[in-house]
Image (cartoon, rainbow, N blue to C red):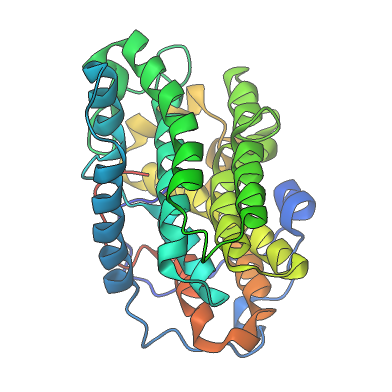
Length: 340
């Protein structure tokens, strides 16, 4: 899931509607414009930036404790370098906590899973940046892991972070707050998201080059982490099957929305960088052009909010999740650095 520090002053994006395969397959097309959607709970009084930055401070502290330097020291230093990067926005853990609190869950119950999601997210970024993958020299406002520690150590750091995340969930989640059956579902959900049918599948197709399968790549590389983060929060709090499905569709839509908007902003801010990304990564901008990518973004925003409309019984507790959608599209403030 991607966030950008580029800020737009417009309060909303308003684009014409066109249906694309990703909308039809993953989250269904919403044909109504945003101006005609049912009246929703107002988010105007909610301070998302304060909510977000407060959670970032708590999560950073817990991540620092979760990955102490020990033998072999260099592996742990490489792990900490990527996980504790100052530019990180902590979007997966923040979404997990917000979803957990939506259904009445205790924030303390969500923190271990939130930290695990950040470990898994960081591991996937370390591996994505490798020369044999996306070959990116920088990440989160600093040199990428392999640039600092070498390819061999970067691979080991990523390999170590995946199981550490699972172990952290099991060893640190308060058993009096979360039954073991729920933890098993959380672990299974994360494994599904990062595995051969999830993020790994998206990376595989992205490596093949060309623009075929852009919908699948966007869903898997960027939608899976958003989906997993929202679903894990709901699972921890005991959300119903129907509510989990709403979170699943919501998270996937938001995850892809972040990346689509990032791609559009890069076109406007740095054509040279964008041209380089076109050659190595499948994006809606590269496949369809900016105008149609804008239509996809608006469809995604409408669908994400539509899923939350079905959770209106929870009142103001759903406001943070609504606010994430508008932030993904509008970038009304800056959190962290140029990072995921």
